[in-house]
Each structure stands twice: as C-alpha cells, then as structure tokens.
Length: 122
Image (spheres, rainbow, N blue to C red):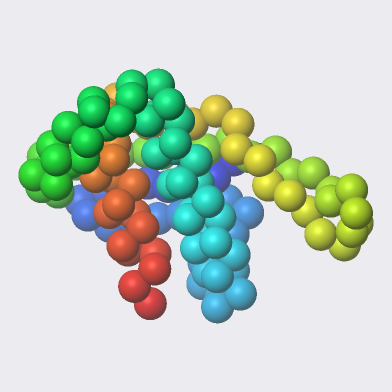
C-alpha cells in the first residue's frame, strides 16, 4: 500500500489509505504524519549527527516555497499489520520513502514542515 503526496504549484494532493476529506480520516492522517516526521527526523539525525542536523535546520529555515521544484512527489510505502493484541486495530509501518525529484536535506526538511502545516491547519 502506498501513500502519495503530490505538491504542485503549492497545492497538496494526498492519495492513499487516508480519506482526508472526512474528519476521522484527516485525524488518522495527521496522527500518522506526526509519527512519520518524527521517524524521518530521527533517521536523518542518526545518520549525520546533531551538529550537521542543526546546520540543515538553519538552512531549511531559509528555504522558500519558490526554491522547490514546481511539482514534487513524496511516495511512502506502507505496510499494514494487524495488532497482535487487538485484531480490530492495525499498525502502519513505513517502508521505503522516495521523493521525486531528489531534494537536498534542507529542502526535504522544509517539505516535511510545509506538508505538516498544510494538513494540520484545519
């Protein structure tokens, strides 16, 4: 199962298992997104270290939306597994994450924040 987020000229379209048109679906997506961002930031920090990460954060603070390509696709592979303790619930695990076109770390961090602001503002 895939979650695809397309940003085209500043507009965001979400395609995947979350129905962001309903309050319940939006809440599920926002919850997933918060966990996803935390996971991605932790991966970046583990890979490059705190000092380098703080430099990327300061660069990301200076990125403007216009600096991003006109169209960006963020594809997140999801693996859904039944909860071992409660079979009425599922756990979503993130597999591969791809961004097209490739972005540097500062622009990727800006992109995560941009999507976060857009989906949580309602």
